[in-house]
Length: 376
Image 1: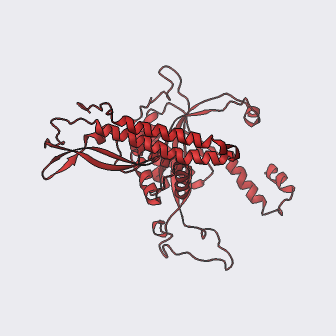
Image 2: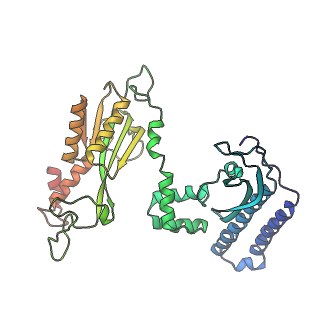
Image 3: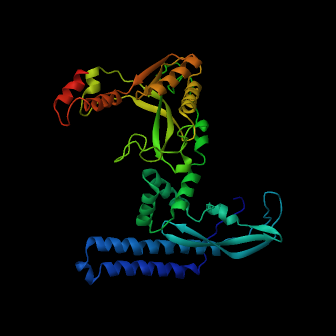
């Protein structure tokens, strides 16, 4: 911020720094003392983690206190509408939860009668609106991406010692993804050349679409039919049949990417071991929507592919898993746009269907199953 200087900590802060150094020395001396020989490594690690985290929290608090004492008063502070704040008061505190625990941040408030306070120091420190620090929120997002909210809550508590409620975890994750729709449009696209530069032949342009079942609350499910929406019919008395298990809604996923082709013979594709060369997916673009239908998602995929190759000069390839309805939607979009499309069906998916069919003709663990699948 223009005109704002952090300043140097006051000389009186040296006493607080000496206390921190004394605590660190005391912790090391306690762990390395006479009783250390009878203390296990995991006990020492636990003590260092718990007490060391508290010591680091005190270090952050010390720094914040020193910065608050050195904060200079600014002249001519006004809000975005030009309303001045002629009065300045120190000591306005705000609690922030860091990865090491709570830290109290005091800063100067600039005031005027009937107007909300302004805190320029908040902008200098880049404080988030929530009471959780950016580092802690970043850790929350990483843990949520790796698992469920309950798992993320436990991981955050185990690693940082900070307990965050599930609702706060959800809010942090939603806010972190707020700019996701604008991420891909903001990226520069090298249209027409597949990102390989002018004068070089463009590689293939690949698209793909799929579905993923997501557990939903009953009120968020799609209508099951015009006759009895939302009602489940029990077909069997002892167990649930197909379509009767769980409450899931299909999320529609799509992907567009460029590929760097690799020349290989079939034996090289099927060979095992190291040294294999495989095509690389480059400049990947994703879309996912749990509210839209498959036609809308596939339309968005073709829109992105059209932006990359508006003249249809490249070879378009669609990777699918054998879903006939999905293939029909892809063909309709290709025909409407005048695109010559190569459709590749995932061999592994097709093979899995054959293995499932084999169970209808042979008992479990019958060696003849493998021969039947091979013959088909």
